[in-house]
Length: 139
Image (tube, rainbow, N blue to C red; front, side, top):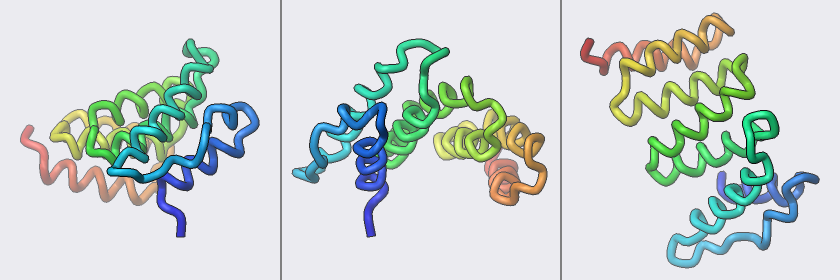
């Protein structure tokens, strides 16, 4: 079963617009696979240099990579950038909120979970995460 990192590399290497950025399959040599993969996605991100051409999928992938590496601040920046182009993506609002909550910013996360639920009130994952954020927040 492929890892998330392998799945992201495969996606990049098969995408018609970005396959040239997927240089080679990153190797996990002393933990450098993450750095190599981030570099490949950053190269792809540079192809959309402004808000009008920025691809939210690349930002989501970068956010996922940063989240996996324990860098919630960078992950949140990427998810926030993706939301500029995909403001109706309830799952992305939830992911953004969860990233903030995991970095101790539960109060901010509560509002973002609310945004997710305003788009899709039946999205149970956001409801559960909202409850956990309330439980952990100090208002």
